[in-house]
Length: 200
Image (cartoon, rainbow, N blue to C red; front, side):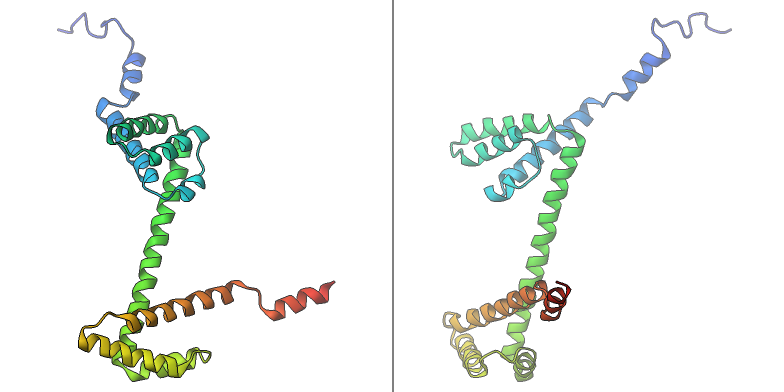
């Protein structure tokens, strides 16, 4: 026999739906934790970097203020305040901040990979004489005699367990080569400049 009270619970089905659509307490807690963590990541960054992140001024000020506080309890309170300010951000603002942080991570990974490539090149220079010949062919502006002396000294440092002065200098030379070649790539070629001059 059908229950005559079925469906007459005192509220409409739309109220059920509204209740259902609200985030659960655990979901809200997850969102709050994620925003707090995002705020902490910003606090851990250099101040100049934080100043360039697109976000409301009051949120940025709270983060910059927190960076200055050394007292443990004061910093903890300010961190909570940062979390509160982070919760005032729109989803779009949060997404923009997250993208910015992700781009920093990508840049850091790329920098780390580049540094590893310098270390590999340096180690190859110490173990393989052909590597120096190849390097000099690619970069004829290098002082071959100076490099040979550095390589010889770096090998001696390793053999005698001495401070790695020459070893480090080789790394700096490789790093400088990379910087110079990047600058050259970024600058417009002479031909392009001449073409521009012709158009006037």
